[in-house]
Length: 281
Image 1 (cartoon, rainbow, N blue to C red):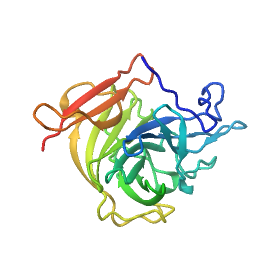
Image 2 (image 1 turned 90 degrees about the horizontal axis):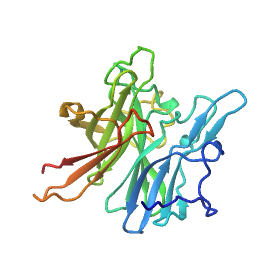
Image 3 (image 1 turned 180 degrees about the horizontal axis):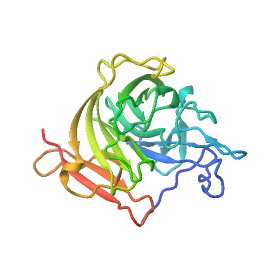
Image 4 (image 1 turned 90 degrees about the vertical axis):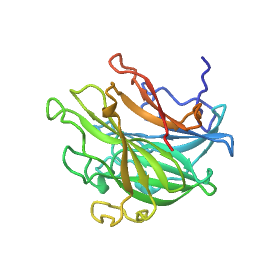
């Protein structure tokens, strides 16, 4: 099996997490740009706040050559900087998905969960969890717009009731310059697998909230419109920790396909899965 190592600007591999907790990365999404023959990938960074041992690593969006050699890092908005206080992104809820659109002129990136200033995380009944989808001009690498997207409530209670539970967005996939397929992933401790829902999200008409520092204090009037396309619970099969989505090969009947991938988090109790779907015209 061939392995390509992502490298830092100094040409060295990124340090091991266990040895260099304050200098490492948390890669999430990766997309290929055939126009430049380079890859773009996102890192969630890190936020661990402990007495006398706080770790703050800002998220990043980076480009590399196909051999893993560093190319560049995109400038990110100040609202994505990590803080020891309850400001900015939450831990493990930062830059999760990436997708190119408009013939690779645009890059979209999404947060997995709401920033502290943008309101609460998803709950079991509320519908007030707002995440941001960022739009970048790929030529200038500048963030030109941000849009607010409302998450679904968490699908099931956890067991026990106060155990960990979450709903967020692991990936997005553009189908044209204004519409995205958005994957929402709900997990509740005490219940096997995840609830995966796929929505058609339309950014056309949504407010640009780039200059709005708090979606909680200043709620936008026009959110991203969304329509449920698929709830994988209806498939009647075990679905694990879906992390990514991409268009797959054209099928023999000429229809497009989409592949979803779930990773096992290096756990014996979880499964790595590839799920192939036919796109009906």
